[in-house]
Image (cartoon, rainbow, N blue to C red; front, side, top):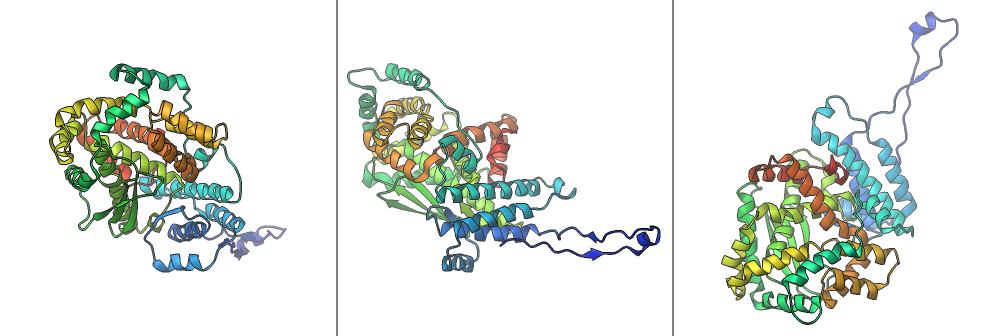
Length: 439
């Protein structure tokens, strides 16, 4: 809805009395729009965009009638852009008193930038084409670094030395990893152990609301390996895609990333501290293609290191997860070392997506690039290109997001594990933007 300014004419009789010429009527400032009103309109605007883009609204747990009302009409895209313009203009300046509350100041910047990202997404729906970097900046408030093939080749050379033998590196890497696939029948038990340990470690440092929980489902035919659907009321639905083999290290990755202290905890803390404690309605909705996603994915990936610092992860996997999966625990350290080297190739996925979405290469070439430089199996690489089709530059949120979050948290933690948990939780419960992580 576009704001209409109200004007009040004030005539000051005392000024007229001391002047030969009458002074023109003075117009009072437009009434200050209350932030909670802006927040409500923002939520409804996000829901309206969701009528044009089925992937746009990742979560919503506000008043059910708002979603029902949004579904009753499909507001034209140009009108949605105009409404976002008006809403940005209506965001009031901070008062001196408000500047003393960091979260209040962050809230203003957050809403403005989220609305700008909404406008960019609407433009994309209207047919505007951005380059990969233009898109990531517009939607996620960040641009990933560019790396040449030589950057990844150095890492591949390290793996060559760790995996000697005949055949291509990807063939040797795949053969090595096949020894660490979790049998499908044992996956639920392995995943349950991983979740329980991630939750135990999180609760040692963070007090979560009573009743928080999530349900796990195993699904197929998805472009992603795992997904958290936040339901509100401190509940989540976590889906795990079993299309491709699940390796033993994915148990901790998924349990932490989707659950504790990742997406589930992130959404729970936002609901408790910002929605319930402060009444900030804007956090009842999560537009996927927005700066919020870099914070969400970055904290979810970095949270794995927070929960399992140093050698603690491989120790737990060896003592608990390997036996549950029926795998040889004596190989846990060897597998972790190879996985750590392979993790350094994380930005290779960005390069494949950048080239593919910029139309410099086609799907087959993108999949081949992922196989060569990201060491993905052909099936996994093909699945990843389908992820590019759906989520496009979203890929930067996983690796760049993790790096930005890690840098931000560790620069403030004082070097102690407890300080790291404290700063990590503060970030989870705040409306901080990706660009603010560099400050």
